Amino acid sequence: MTVTEALATYRKKDLIEKIFHSLKNEIEIKPLRAWSDASIYGAILVEFIAQRFISLMRYEFDELKHNSTKFIKKSLLNLTVTINHMKSGAKNFIYANFDPMNTLILRGK
Image (cartoon, rainbow, N blue to C red; front, top):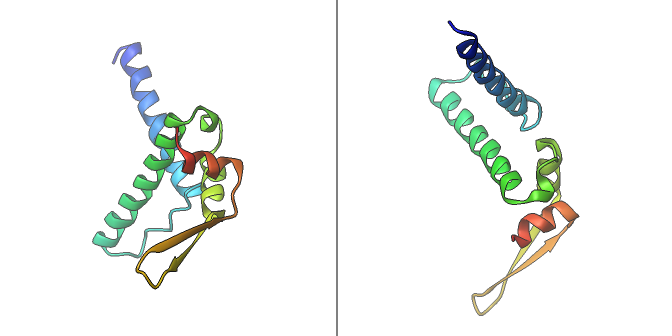
């Protein structure tokens, strides 16, 4: 193996370790040791989608590039939506618990 190949392999390993660290410590994936295979695949899929969603928000919004996954997740968890169903069949959405981060995400570009 050349030095360049070794460095490329190391960087791939480091990236994967960082993703799993984020899944376990920031997204808070549950322990997977006693589940069925289908449950494990489903849980990992949902956790990777959550991780990808947060990564895409960091890519989309310059203001989020230097925020950790933990803080983005906490901001989104604090946001609440109340839905009032009107007699006419229309729905009225009431958002609460705004902070600068979730406001930015909801407002978009």
